[in-house]
Image (cartoon, rainbow, N blue to C red):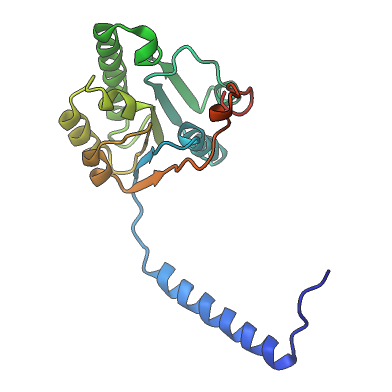
Length: 211
């Protein structure tokens, strides 16, 4: 099936509209001159927050960048993304610090200790990016929002530290229920909206989809 055949006049109008649109976009892009490391937040109830972050890690690796990852919660999970990324040991360093979800450990003190240990590692890695020879170009704090939601870390300390991260370092924070203070501090915030999920129909987590 073919679309509507345009007359020569309609084609010219369409082409002129496209030219104007490109000129306007080029003019807008010319004003975007700042280059800096971003504080990025992936949140929301929908699926894909960590997946998107690891997609950024893959993109960074493809651009010869170095990536650091601290996993705050999913410590017991073996994910497909991790296996792929670990094929590039010179470019990525992954620290699995989590003890599982809070409702799995059922041990509040243990959760807090794990969160504090993961945050200490996160700060150490971020500090290693100051100066002329940064250790990483991007650091992913996977599920940090979860431990902040349960008050396992001091929110003000975390937000202030991230606001003062090295200028050229990208930091990606994932997890649902991101705190307003972190959202306000971030440069880029994406909320994953759940429209439909097979879990509600009794479908369990699938290999290659959830992990």
